[in-house]
Amino acid sequence: FFATRASRGNRDAKSMAGRRPPHLYAAVYMMLRRGNSILLSQRKGTGFMDGWYTLPAGHVRAGERLVGAVVREAEEEIGVEIDPADVNIVSVTHRRMPKREYFDAFAHVARWKGEPRNMEQDKCSSLGFFPLDSLPPQTIDYVRKGIEATLSGVPFSEHGWEE
Image (cartoon, rainbow, N blue to C red):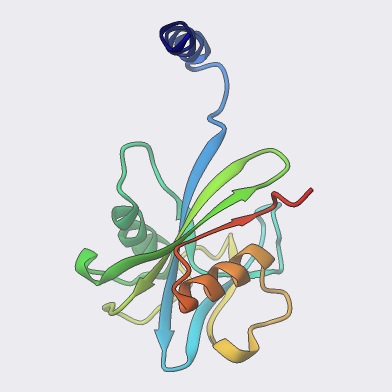
């Protein structure tokens, strides 16, 4: 049974290579804090949750490590330099969306160099620090839950799997 299933799985994967998108994507979310406040960006022009707040984030590229994605996305999105040693992946969420599934890795960033600024003005209308105890009402739900899980030290959660 196992040999048949494994060989069929390999054959199916090979025959599907290049013909369909992967079913599971990975994204990183970075938590930069100043005292009791956290950096959030307001989305715009993406067609997904425009006008809502999120942590600075981005997709993990093929062959890229999670910490490397945090470092790269920080420079691309908010113009700060982060030493990989200052990144701690604290929580992961397995998120189900209508057309995709994600592993969302939430990282606490201990230190960074430079002042955060909006480097992607076509995708972000504003960037600022918000008190953790009063995040904007328009904070994306799974991001809010990821922030809570990260602050509480919950290593794994799920979102969107409710029936």
